Amino acid sequence: MAPDTVSLRYFLLLAQELNFTRAAARIGVAQPALSARIRRLEAELGTALLVRTTRSVELTAAGAALAESAPSALAALDRAWETARNAAAGHLGTLRIGYSLSTGAETVPALVDRLMRDTSGLEVGAVPMATPEISPAVADGRIDAGITRGEQPGRGVRRFLLRRARIGVQLAQHHPLARHQEIEIADAAAYPLRLPDRAANPVIHDQLSALFRDSRPHPRFHTPAVAFDMSQRDLRDGTTLAPSGEAAATTQPTGLTWRPLRGAPTLTYHLVLPREQSPLHRRIRAVAKTLAHELHWLPD
Image (tube, rainbow, N blue to C red; front, side, top):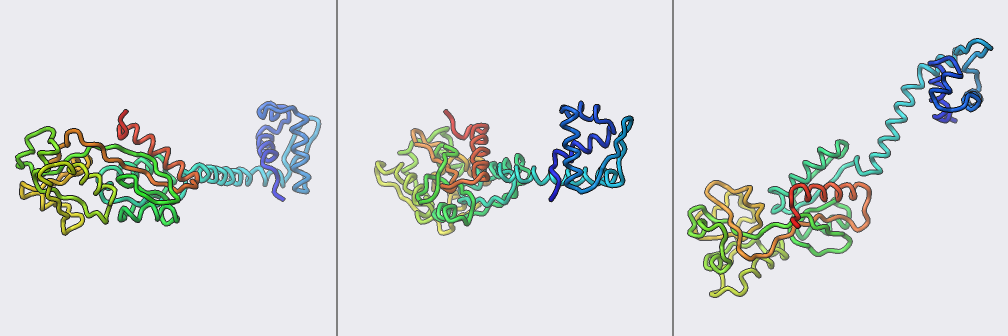
């Protein structure tokens, strides 16, 4: 049986002082209590650790060997305890985040960077996924967390509002509407409107198309043949507009710009976590909440 660590730590202080009175004072216990601890330690080891006389205290061979080897053993034990505490607090482990491509331009990189900077023992892997697959993957444990645009349906998960973003349109810099700081919804509806494929995100597709429901004449919607075209070639013709959140303003290809739509509601971004949450999940939630506050993702 391993000796109790309190007695071992008391012994190490006594081995330094070689004086029960001074060692007891450093520890903050009565001298009889220290003597009882040392006797218990010797009984557990089955050997004497000290030679006591009325005038001195000396280490036996066993005591000297223990005084030399015990500090490294205690340090290793301290590290083990700290590792366990960090794991229990969600500071250690591997975190798998699934995200929709539309959140990958700004929101996900900011969250991943903050998690890795604030939690050095955490390994974070982020993978793009089709939006409808994210909530089910969180629910069945294939990923630990998800970031989606819109409050996506799905059982077995909890959704936390992470960000609100204005809705606007991407358009060519030479487009006639680009000279306005804000664009009227009716004015935008007069031009061809590119919407994401509904199968990729029904919630956002329906929200964006609903903006123009009452416009006359009816807007001309189309879905690009390429699901995610970084060059935005279909907008460069100077006619087509692409309704999108304001995060698009930070990742514009050359020749394109973004303008808000006057009176449009906000797009929402959500952190998706399992309904039953571990310390790691609670850590993600805490970091995300702090980040949203610092970056003003959720204005009052």
